[in-house]
Length: 123
Image (cartoon, rainbow, N blue to C red; front, side, top):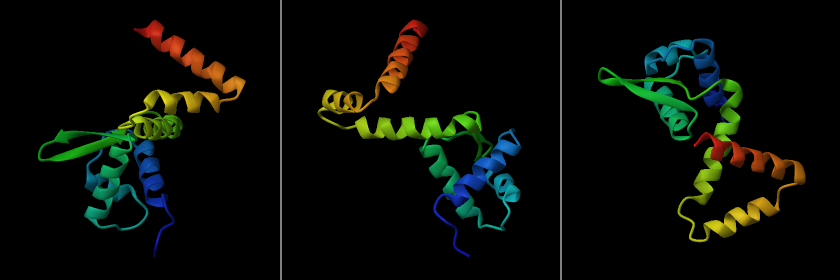
């Protein structure tokens, strides 16, 4: 049975959220509702790690995975990762940022200003 796009990733995120200790590929697979190939689970975990939604660390000869933050913040982490990717490698980064800021409504602009102020104060 074919899954809808993102369904496996969502199942993995829910599984890791339900059991917060870091998990191996096999342990994640055991938490999923369907019996999936080890390589299928491993590929999904690697992709989620590349998207910044999971962290991984070495455990013996393999890796263990955990959520990069609270599940409620993962959508924001993913959006930030996409924004970072949009900027990476751009020659006219200032222009990209200026166009982004110009597209913000006043409330969003105020939130951005506050985030920038908070980042400056944290340094």
